[in-house]
Image 1 (cartoon, rainbow, N blue to C red):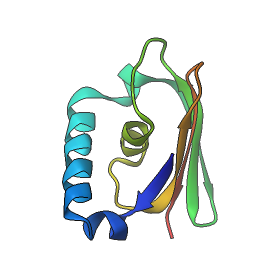
Image 2 (image 1 turned 90 degrees about the vertical axis):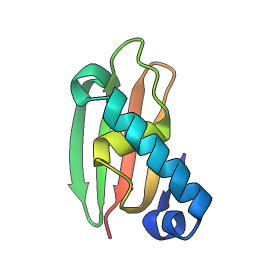
Image 3 (image 1 turned 30 degrees about the horizontal axis):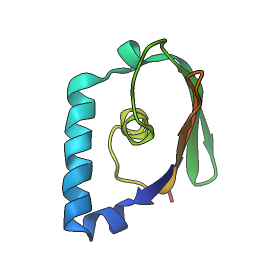
Image 4 (image 1 turned 60 degrees about the vertical axis):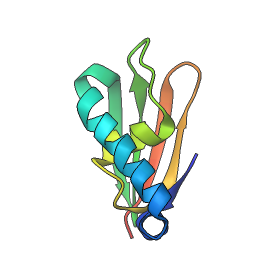
Length: 95
């Protein structure tokens, strides 16, 4: 999934409302300890990458996972993917 940057989200009222709703769900339903088995954050030039493994049986969308790891959606875009075995990679553009 390609993550939209905050400017595109804020300039689309319907999309912004949807992201707000999803973010509230993430804050209410998910924590690192109940969702993620293990992960490694890696900082690079203008981005942060998270690679890891979801706990078995966890149902979370790629957007929700990116919001959990980044604590929101105030970023410059990125990507998020979850494979069928629960392994994930989330890249957040920071600049």
